Image (cartoon, rainbow, N blue to C red; front, side, top):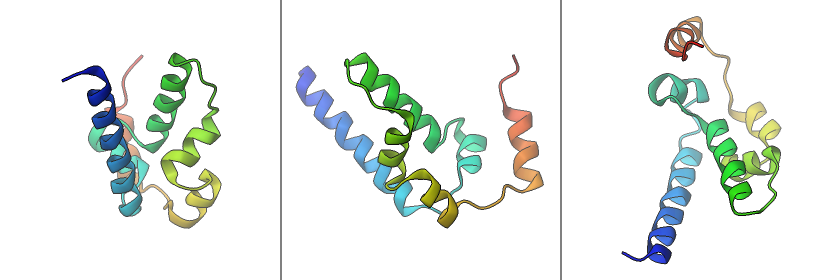
Length: 98
């Protein structure tokens, strides 16, 4: 597989992942963090880093809007639930130790 085809496939997969997350607004970031060790905000940070590697400037809020499909503050107000004590305990237990 050539580099251009691989890049196009990877881009399509990323778009599909964002679509999937958009369709699963019920899955909270803390759920993703507890299960997989990353969340929508992590994807946003990776987006900023990848843009920087390509010499492009994308700020974090722009990246979050791309990942969330709307400004983060709006998404958070409409879809983010308060984390339960159990979710927070699981997150604390699974967080990397410095």
